[in-house]
Amino acid sequence: MSLLNVHDLKKHFPINQGMFSRQTETVKAVDDVSLSVEEGETLGLVGESGCGKSTLGRCIIRLIEPSGGKVFYDGADITRMTGPEMRNMRRKIQMIFQDPYASLNPRMRIGDIIGEGLTIHNLAKGNDRKARVFELLDRVGLGEEHYSRYPHEFSGGQRQRIGVARALAVDAKFIIADEAVSALDVSIQAQVLNLIKDLQQEFGLTYLFISHDLRVVEHVSDRVAVMYLGKIVEMAPSNKIYKEGVHPYTRALLSAVPVPDPSRKSERIVLEGDVPSPINPPSGCSFHPRCPFAEKICSEREPALVEDGDHSVACHLFKPATG
Ligand code: SF4
Image (tube, rainbow, N blue to C red; front, side, top):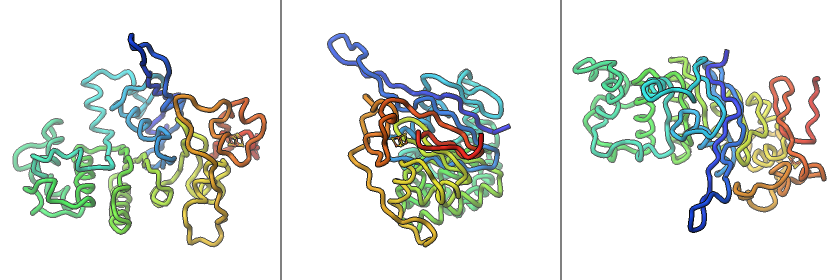
């Protein structure tokens, strides 16, 4: 059984207007998303900014309440959990954010930031807690001398290491990394990505790795899901997506990434127009106004996400080899 199962997850934001604040429209930020993540696996989640991937990550851990659907972690239904159950669940599922500085209390010393979870969850106190924090600092490439320093004394890469240490402190098993390295320089990105991969091996961690950067996602992911306007449009093992991605949106995203591998097609697919407004998405396939392959049916009927073995695609032109 998968460690995480998401079924038909939705997050619809009402838009209220007028004197009586009547709901006039709805933004479907996440619309009927289903996916699963195996234990020890990394699922990459990619798409342009505003496609709903961060909202999906937050809905999974209920930092944003979903409007519908179910999320199961190790068989337990997260969407039905009460406050205390959810607090316990947030020990197992931790989130690492793009801007670690915003999530680190500037008035707290690093030792206390990392050790806070140990205290809250009654995992260690006193000297045991301090020893555990020293261990964690060492494991993420920081030193004991950093224990008493404040967040502003660290670089972006070091702050991200602190975020990782904080997740490890509470023995998290599943980590949602939301644009975790997007704000870092490329050389620092590589170091933090290598750390994330090493820790996965060492602690058997499972990741949902959210990023708009396909290069970064390729580096860490076993499978990749591509999102467009609140829906998953393609999902497959990482090598399939990067070598044989078939959805026109996936192909357009990939064609914009410079690749040193000459075996890959390098023809650039330029997307027409901007990402449509999620308030009033296009009819049928919501990608049709920008799709260079759109046919009549594309504006009339929404394509279902069709499975072909380990590869799922939502496009009318996709013809599964099996079935
Ligand atoms: Fe393009 Fe049509 Fe496929 Fe949508 S369904 S991606 S518009 S070809």
